[in-house]
Amino acid sequence: MMFEHEDGNPVLILQDEQSWKLLESTKHGRLVVTVAGEPDIFPVNYVVGDRKLFLRTAPGDKLAELTINAKVLFETDGILSEEAWSVVLRGTARVLDQSADIAAAETLGLRSWVPTLKDFYVEITPTSVSGRHFQFGEQPERDI
Image (cartoon, rainbow, N blue to C red; front, side):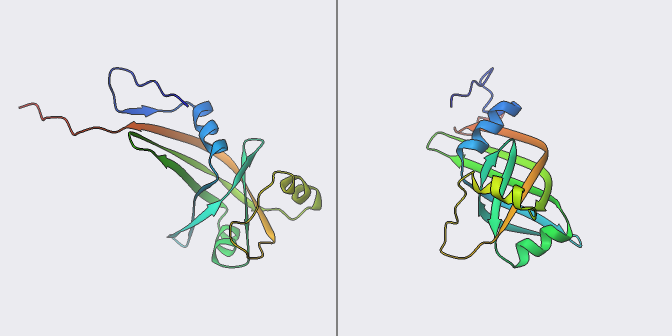
């Protein structure tokens, strides 16, 4: 994906469509949940379907915490030799409990990366998506 930076600015604010393309082409990120003012972060693999994120999980802190507070943050990024990008999605998580919803999520092909049982599907419906693209380079000289 090509990014056009204007006026030599090394930071480009991405349009929603660009952010979604990056989300769709990446399979890993970090899920941030907060309970009682305490944040927690979890590495996850995910898939995008119908402008929503889906992940699988097992019983544990991640599942318990997003059940207590459904407001979540998700971040994914990519780093290459001369450029990088980051996309942040804010949204609401819910554990899928209807068989039709689970069946639909299963058609997306989301597989666990590690050989553990992950019986719960989580859907994240976004409230906002933002992204930035960065061109690497040396720090400029300070004007005196």
